[in-house]
Image 1 (tube, one colour):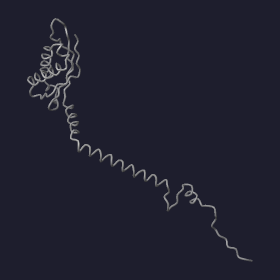
Image 2 (cartoon, one colour; image 1 turned 135 degrees about the vertical axis):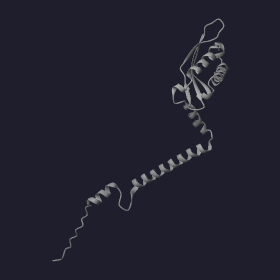
Image 3 (cartoon, helix red, strand yellow; image 1 turned 45 degrees about the vertical axis):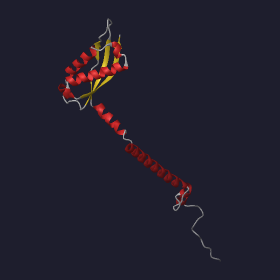
Image 4 (cartoon, helix red, strand yellow; image 1 turned 30 degrees about the vertical axis):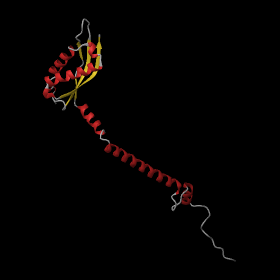
Length: 175
C-alpha cells in the first residue's frame, strides 16, 4: 500500500487570516486606509503651523496691533457717572439735556468709593451743561466744544484725579 501523507494545513483561512483579509491589510502592508489618515494628519499639522506662523508674523509686522491693547487698557480706566438731566440756557424756550458721561482716567479708580470726589465732579459737570444752548449742542462741533469745556472744568476741579477724556454714553436734547 502506498503511503499517503496527510498535510495538516487546510485551505480554509484561520481566524487571524480572516480578520486580516476582512480589514484589507496585512502585517507588512499598512493599506490605503492608514496611509490616507496619516497623510491627512500631516496636512492638518502643516496647515496649523502655517496659520500660527502667519498670525505671529502679522502681529510682529503691524505696529497698529498694539493700539488695540492700549484701547483695552483705556477702557479699564473709566468711571461711569449717573445720567444728568439739566435745563439748557435758551432764548425764550424750554430745553432739556439728558446726558450720560463716562470719564477716562490716567490711572485706575481708587479702591475706596469715598476717595472718588463725585460731588465736585458732578457740580462741575452740571455748571458746564446748564450754560450750554440747545442750538449749539445739536451741531457736531457743539458737542466737541462741550466735551472740551467739560474736560477743562473737571481737570481744574479735581486735578489729582487724572481725568484725561470725557465720553458721552447718552445724549438727548429735548426742545
